[in-house]
Length: 153
Image (tube, rainbow, N blue to C red; front, side, top):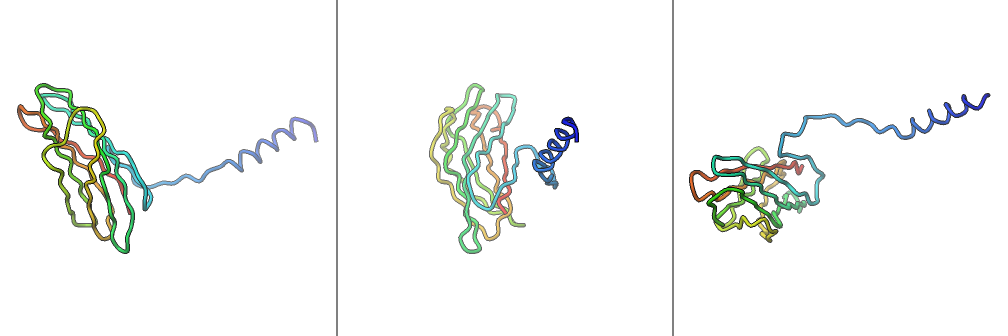
């Protein structure tokens, strides 16, 4: 066997060993991600309005206890690039298993671009999706909002 044939055979074996099966399924919607049965993920969404642009980021964790899925918004960061604006934003956590349950933050979430602890928790049996809703405090006009979701089933 000549040297080039040996190299080609060795490369074919290496390529076969590196082959990874392709996982197919429904494509994630913008602002949504698919995840494992427990863990932590950072979700981000952006809302545009006539008064500015708001971006919300939340660190979300989840785990299973018996038949319940416990999902927590551990902390958040909100920026709102518009004038004027206040620090009365909201972060809401929705859990869905065919029906929805929501947990609501106080009307005092800061929009200063810094990380803030929150500990907003929701519990629901067999939850399939967790959604974080950000409602930005525009102070003038309607408050823009956006959503970011993650599959937790």
